Image (tube, rainbow, N blue to C red):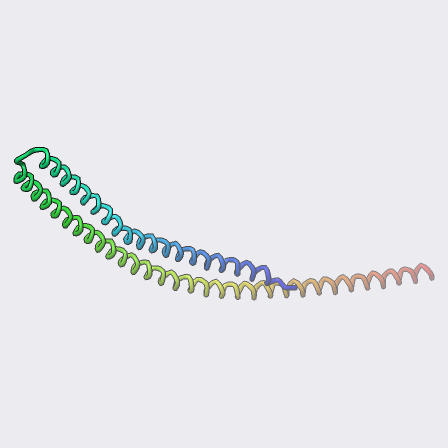
Amino acid sequence: MEYATPVTTAFEAQRATIEQSQRAFEQTLEFQKNMNEAMLDSLDTQESAQRRGVELSQTAIHSYLDAVESTVPGMGATIEEVRAAVDEQYEFLLENHAETFETIAAEYEEGLSAYDEMTDDYVGALDEQVEMLVEAHEELESQSVEVAQQWGDQIEELQDQVEEVQEQVREVQEQAADAVEIDVEE
């Protein structure tokens, strides 16, 4: 009889679970890394959309100033001063806007690099720990299989001994029955 098969099957299932959990964890980290990179990539789109909004606002003010200039005679010089002041403020706003997004992107990218480095170190350490766990698990399996096999061998020996004793009992019973028959016949 093979007593070690259930033990081996259980250990293989446990190891498969450990390895699947490790892969799932690594895939989760990879997903997070991809999400972080997507967020970083989306900063350009956000900056562009906001810049277009600011520029559209500037165009709207220019249109308003054009309308005032065309409807109020003699306001040309004043309107040009206002237009210059508006343009100066929007230029300042757009420069600050660009610098802000550059800073945000640089900080976020730096944070992602640190995060990636930390998770790479963590995954490396985890890989080592899982490898050690699997090795210890395999050693435990080997010992358990050996114990199960020894136990199975002992059970088989015991069964053989029980069968021998039962055979001896049958032989003694037969001999006793034969002896009783001879006594009865005489």
